[in-house]
Image 1 (cartoon, rainbow, N blue to C red):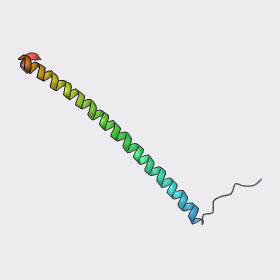
Image 2 (image 1 turned 135 degrees about the vertical axis):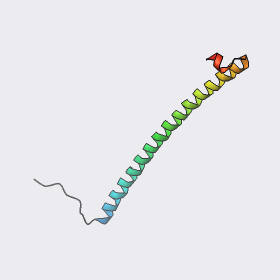
Image 3 (image 1 turned 60 degrees about the horizontal axis):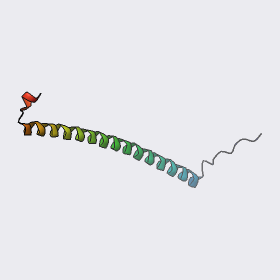
Image 4 (image 1 turned 120 degrees about the horizontal axis):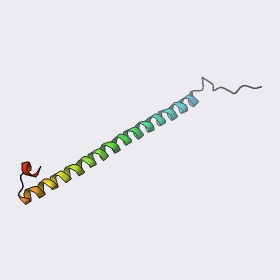
Length: 73
């Protein structure tokens, strides 16, 4: 029964490649998270802008109709 071979702890090139791979994975994960946050912020901002636009249009319609905000409420 043979044991699985273990990596040589003194193999600098292999350790460096492994570290670079892990670093790339960590950076990729960081950017995936940042992209998700940005998407969420943009979605929230877009929804707020749409609501604000609707409120402004409603106020303009009331204003053009001659209604005051207190009476229109």
